[in-house]
Amino acid sequence: MSFQDDPDVIRWRLHLKSPVAKVYRALATDDGRARFWAESAREHDGFIHFVFPNGARWNGRILQARPPHTYAVLYFGGSVATFELADDGQGGTDLSLTDSGVPIQHRAEVIAGWVSVLMNLKAVVDFGVDLRGHDATRHWDNGYVEN
Image 1 (cartoon, rainbow, N blue to C red):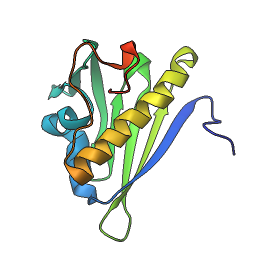
Image 2: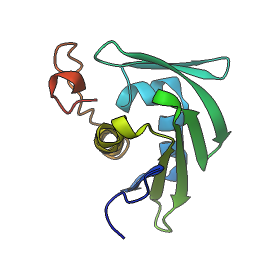
Image 3: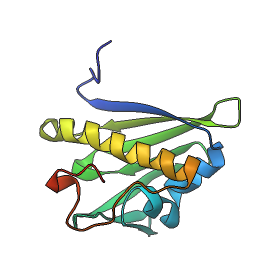
């Protein structure tokens, strides 16, 4: 199997030392998402209203919210981002992300973007550190890896 070889689905896995319930709260709450994913990510009427450092906005419909194991949202370009959380048997979490339906012209950027988001999730949940700069001039569109 080669790297990201399914043209229809992006897949990433991440191991966290934090328990499943803590990771789920980071994904499924306004404060949790704002700590690692977007400057603001407030839920209202089944939609998450994302605001990103570059000013981009997205209203993503929540497709699944099955605590504490599954969380899925309609994401940029109409893709479906699904987070599956499993207990690792040692008090931590094995996270599997699939993002299906990413337009081919955005695929490379989205593959890299998920690494940025997931590593920041790990930093926040496991270590209490936000790796983002929160600087409106230093963001992904300007070549910075902060998401």
